[in-house]
Every structure is written in structure tokens, then in C-alpha cells.
Image (cartoon, rainbow over all chains, first blue to last red; front, side, top):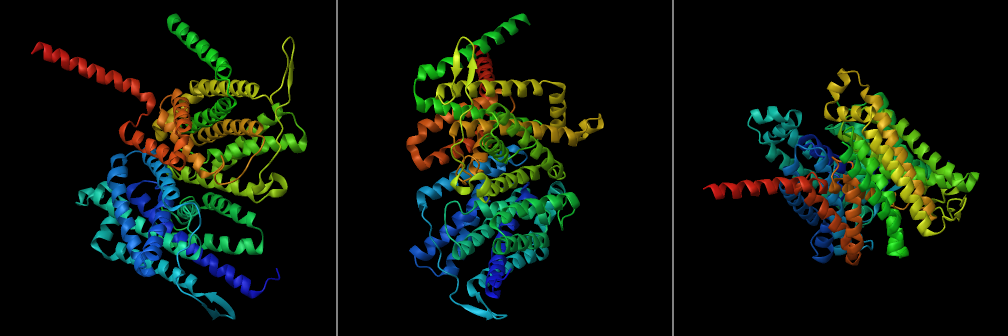
Length: 288
Length: 334
């Protein structure tokens, strides 16, 4: 391949930024899956609505972009609490019902977005203008800021789960639901927290995506699928796995279309997942 | 026993009569085309329920119907096979792919299966999208021929470009497939599947090869998904891998919703669910963009308020009736 270094650099940086968006998605999904035992298939729609909340805060009401992002995270956390309390808690112990409810929710939220926000594409303002030079190539600043945000959120979540009392309670609840009850940890409260944190992360991811890419009512589907793949790749409940899996998928998305053909990009996740499943069914960093 | 047999026979005859008369009575191309699509969907949802028999949920059924659709269409268009061979081979292709994928997929348990099938369907769709030399890519595959006309003595040649004839063809193939699925469920194999759903460990301990049966189950279900896809392809004459087409994630969601709204515990559930929701969405067409919202709300409400679906309603009514009866009796006594 005789592409200039600039193109390669661009592909790598784009892939890296995309990858961290996927990581944010996967973290929320894996948190909800390991604590509530629910596959939240409407998470992509939470991500999309979060992006629109930021858009309206920022563009229509003129709030500062970063402040809008935190508002959006708070709003979606509240939305997550609502969903958990009224939709997911009543069907907690079942297998099919939560999936169907999350699918129904997908339809509802997506058509709400189509009706409320319209089908045409919009964009949140860029996180930062301009670029800086790295290894002789220009790197756009907004990509780097997006990655910084995602890494920061991952570290915050890690610290929360490892160091704080509530975080430890969540880990305990994920490890053994019944054991946690015996120690006086309320599963309902843990579920609420998982859902709130998961939705806030999705809102952050959606905002970053809306700033780098575009806002459309169907923007959530692709990251959802990627997030699910990351959970399988990295192993459920593994932070390192989510980060490695996410960055890997992002780089695949960034580099392969440039180097080979876009068709290969779509095939790669399935092939990698199958190979991982054959070699290590519990995921790269997961444990049974 | 004989009385029950008679009742069943009457029901079948009545259903067959309704199926035959329906397009003539409607006498409307639009509604007949809805019926054809509904038939295709019924086959998809019923075969989705077959996977549920071993306790798995597939969110990638549309992916296998895509293999059947494109497979059958391309066999007819590029290799010049007849429709009758192509539809079967299309189903077979879907089944073979399903069998190969089920082996790695079943290494992880429970909910992961749903997630992996979702990924599979999206991957298939994108492969078609990015392979224009074979599949027409995002322009879609156009000019798929109708099934070859078949000459029948005394009646004459049946031409399937006519929508009523295609409807009869669909009704026949779907009924036949449903019959096979029903017999399978009531066979020794079906009992094993249900045993696996109830308790996997126990099933294994009495000598059922759980993994093989799950693979077989998945392959059989996907075979019928392929058949449904092929039926759709030759009816529609064009296929598109667009995200909003029949092969996108949304369609997978609709299929699961159809299944559970009807009730997945009984064989008739998916059929009832598909018919009811198709009719509701047809009459709700005026709602435009609000239509998916309505279907989603129905799904959520059904799950929260009547988890057994529409098929559980008579039972519920009976219980309610008995309760009321008891109460009135008690009131009379006191």
C-alpha cells in the first residue's frame, strides 16, 4: 500500500477514537448485564437520545458544550433509573421478558426520535478546533479530547468500583446476587445504580459520537452491536477486556477500509468472535 | 378420541377453506400482497419459536432468511436453476451456515447466544452490501424471476406472476412447513428439545447430547427461515440489504415481538401474534412514524401485564370466570 503517512495516521486516530466510543457503550452494557442479568438492547437508543439531549442543550439553549454533556449524562441517568424501576425490575428473574421489553423500548425510543428530532442529520459542535502535529502528521484535537474523556470515565468507574463502599457492593452483587443480599446489599438499589451509571456512560458516548460523527435517530444500532461484540471478546465484567476489545474493533473500523476494502470490516468482528469463542469461550480477559 | 379427531378435522377444513377463499373474497391486490408477506412472516416467527424450544432466543433470524433469499435468487438468476430446486437449496444453505455457526456460538451460554445471532445477521447484511459484483450491493438485487409456471393436466398452466397464484403457493409452502415444524415438535426429537429447555443438566444426564440437539434445532429452524426468505425474494422480485429493509435489526425485533405477543408457549401463538400485529399495523398505517412506537408499546405492555401472550387469554378468562362464579356462590350462601 502506497498511501501517505497522513492517511494512515488519520485512519489510526479515527479508529482509536471510535474504539473508545465503543468502550463506553460496552462498559454500560456489561455493567447492566452482570448486575441485573439483563441484555439491555435499547442501550443504543439511550446513547442516541443522550446525544440529542446534548445537542439541544448546546445548540438550542446555548449551554457550554462540556456542561451540556454533563447535563445529558445526568438526564440519561435519571431516565435509566426510571426504566429500571418501571420496566426492568418487574421482570428481573425472567429470561425472555427483559429482552422483549428492551426490544420494545428500542422501537419506542427510535420512533420517538424520528418524530421528535426528524430524520435529517445534525451535528454537535466540535469539542475543539484545529489539530496538532504528531510524528509528522496532523492529528485533530477533538479526537484526542474524546479519547481523553472516555479514558477518564473508565478510570473513574474503575476507582468507584474498587475503592468506594457502593462500588464494592456492586461488585459483590455481580459476583453473587444471593450472597450480597445476605450481607445486606439491596439488589434493587444495585440494579438502579448499574442502570443509572450505564445510561450516563451511554449518554457520554453518544455526545462524543455526535460531535465526531453525525446525529441520526438510527445512530445507536452500530455501537450497540459493537458493544455486544466487545463483551464477548473481552469477557463479561472485565474492564481491561472492554478496553482492549473496544480499541481493537475501533482500529479494525478505522484501518481496514483504508488498507483493504470496507467489506472486510464488516466481516472481521464475526470472524474474530468465532476464533475467540473456539479458543477461549470465556473471552480474552473473562473468567468463568 | 374420535370426537376430538373430528373437531380437529373440521377446524383444518374450515381453515383451508378460509385460506382458499380469502384472496377471492378480498379481491384486492394490496391486501393479497399483505397476506403473502404475512405468510412469510408466520413461517419466520414459527421457526423462531422452534429455537425457543431449546431455550434460546435468536435475534438473527433475518440473517438466515437473507441467505435463503439471496441464495435462491442467485441460483435462479446466475445458474439458471428452477425455482423449485432453488428454494430448497436456499433453505439448505441457510441450514448449513447455521450448523457451522452454532458450534462456536453454543460454547457460551444463555443470553450470549442472542447477542451472537444479532451480530451474525448484521454481518450477513453488510457482506451483501459490500459485495456488489455478486449481490448488487446497496443498489439491491433486481429482476428476480417469478417461479416457473407449472402445467397441470385438466386445469392448465399455473402462472405465478399472478399474485393470487403466488398467494396460493405461499399458503401451500407455509402450511407444509408449519406442519413439518409441528410434527417435529411432537416427535421424539421435539420432546428432547423441550427436555433441554426445562433442565439442561438433567437432559444431559439421561443421555441426550445437548449440544448436538441444539445445533440440529438451530439448523432446522434456519432452514425454514431460508425458505421464508426465498419465498419473499421471488415474490418481491427485488432484494435490498438496507438497514431499513427486511434484513435489518428492526425486522429481527419485530419477529421477536410477534412471537411473544402471540405467546411462545403454544404452537399457534406465533401465528396469532403475527396475524394480529400485521392487521393492527396495517390499520395503524395512518399513524406513520408513530407505528413502530405503537408496536413497541404493545410489546412492553404484553410482557408486563400478560407475559403468556394472547394465547394465554382464554385461560385467563376461564380463571377469572371461575373466580367470579366462586364469589357469587359465596355471596349467595351468606
